[in-house]
Length: 358
Image 1 (spheres, rainbow, N blue to C red):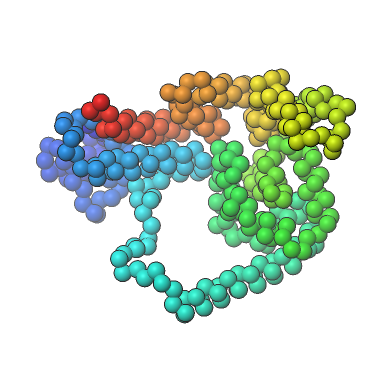
Image 2: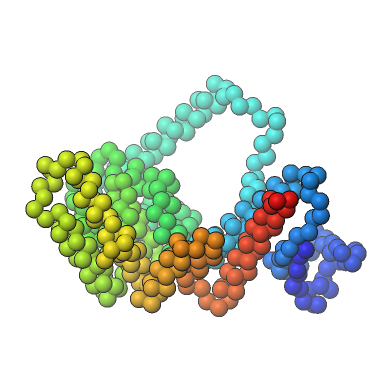
C-alpha cells in the first residue's frame, strides 16, 4: 500500500488513465518530480508468498539500499543533496559482447597513461619542495593544484562526513600522501606536521600526516576554525588524558617492559578512555573542534549511549545523531524525517517478506 500526498493543482497537470493509475507523459517530467518524493510505502499485503518470485524481494532490497543512500547523502552533504532513483545506474552498459581479454594495443595505451600520470605527478612534486608548512600546502592545493570541481566536492562534505575518519583514506588521502610525503620532502614541512600532531589530537592524522592537511583544507574551505573558547576546553580534556596516562605509566621504563606488561598498562589506560573518568573524551574533543556547544555534545553522547543499550532502535538513534551534527533547519528537518521514514518503511516491508511464514 502506498500513500501519496499531492495537491489538486498538481494533480490537474497529470493524465489519469484509470482510478488506480496515474500516467505521466515524457513531456511532463516536472510534474513527475513534484510527485515522486510524496509517494510513501506504508504497508504490504501480498497473501501467499510461497510462490513469490525472488525478483520481487530483490527489488525491495534495492529500494531499501536506495532509501538508505538517499538518507545518508542528504546528511553528508552541505548542499543537502537528494539523489535520484537512477543513482545506482551508471552510464556504461556492460553487455555480453564485452571482451575481458586485453589486446596489445590496450596494454600499450594503459602503460602510456600510467607513465604520463607519473610524469605529471613528478612535475607537481617539484613544486612542493619549497612548501614549509601545512598552511602553505593547503594554499597550494586550493590556488594551484586542485580543480574547481574537486574543491567543490571537498567543501560540500558535511561534518557528518568529516566524522568518518576513513572516508578519504584511499581517495584524497592517497593523493596527498603521494604529493607531499612520498619521495623528495622538505624537512621543514615534516617538522611542521609533527608540531600539528602534538597540538591537535582531535584530527585524524592519517598514515604520514596527510589527515592534517585534509582537515585544514576542509576547515579553510568551510570557514570552520575552532574558536578560542573551544580550544581551551580541548586543552583541558587533553591535559586530563595526559595526567591519567602519566599516572598509569609512572615509574615505568617503557623500553624495558615486556609485551605482556605493556599490553596490561595499555588496557588500564584504554579502560579509562572507554568507561572511566575519560569516557567519551576523544568524541568531546572532536565535537568541540567543530564548535559544537556543550548541550549539543551532551545530547549527541546521550544518543550514543542509547544506541549501544537499545539495539532494536540503533538506527533511529544513529540517524538522530547525524541529524544533530547536520544542524538542520526546520524545512531540512522535515525532509530528513520523511527520508528516514521512507527507509524504515521499506526496511519493514522487507522484514515482513522474510518472516511471513514463520
